[in-house]
Image 1 (cartoon, rainbow over the protein chains, first blue to last red):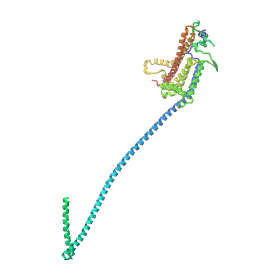
Image 2: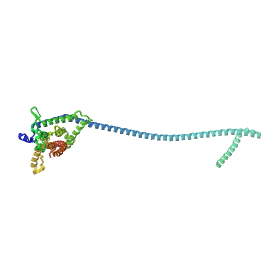
Image 3: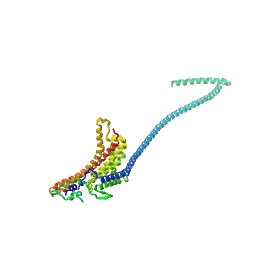
Image 4: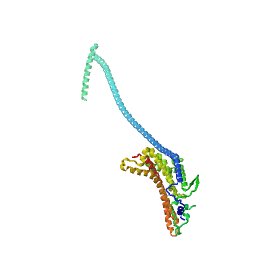
Length: 189
Length: 269
């Protein structure tokens, strides 16, 4: 039996474009329930979760950025410190060099000064010794010569003044001769 | 059981048996009531519509009910679907700022329509609920009311009317014609096509699958066995094709709804 024929005879075939009311209402209600559940409850929930996730990701990125910045800062500080230290070392080295140079110069001048002093003292000493020696020698030689001459001549040269003048003149002659000899020797040298 | 509810398999009618091809037709879309609740006779499509509600809510409840920052598998699938509608449809035409408000509606609409379509190839159910015009019509009606409401809310009464009829002074002498055409197109034809596009696609798809299924059975006699095999392969192919069409039609339905909303919110030129 053909079902179409049965339906046609029963007059049940409706226009498929005419919406039956119960179905329409059920459709509206079914969709409304879906919309209410999803729109009011479930989708806001997932939205907040998605926001949370985005924040978590962004927060993590921010943290990483902060750590990187900190590391960069530390590196820069370290570099600056290193440069400072190098600078300081160079400065100290230079200072030490300068100090050493000045110390050497100072010591040199001190040494020179001491040498001069020693030399001058030596000269003075020598001069004084020479003078003393010369004085004592002159006295001794004068006395000896006087005595000798007195004995030889048999005449006391009592007059000390005259005696002394004679001796002096003699000695001066001697000295002049010696000086002339020394000058000559110097010139020859 | 009345004849119109009988399946082709139950007719035990084969080719060369002197019995005509029990072609599927409008009768395949008519159902006897299964049971009655509060004076309303529940038939199969109604039951499937209610089940659709349960499934859509159930799925999203399972996926998003205890949403975590680090998603589980189900949540990830749910998020993918949610994001598809949100970014792929709503943000695309309405923009992120204006569209956000309509995301829940469009997401609900998409999954509701899709699951209703999907019943077509679910064993035992095997009937697309949207091939009953009442269901697409109900959804199109909601979109239509939303569109009207938004138009008049945004532009006021006169501005809303102008927006609806596409009032544009620069059209000059053809302005009256354009206004009449736009009015018919937007106010009368559009909700109709919106509903019928979905309905007709599902209706035709179901009819095609039914056709090849019935033929596979009907041809099982003599030389007909060869043709029955071809027909069965076609049933499988059409089922796979329907799977694709169901998703596309749900997508198109929601895309159009979004475009209508966009048209309502757009400044008239």
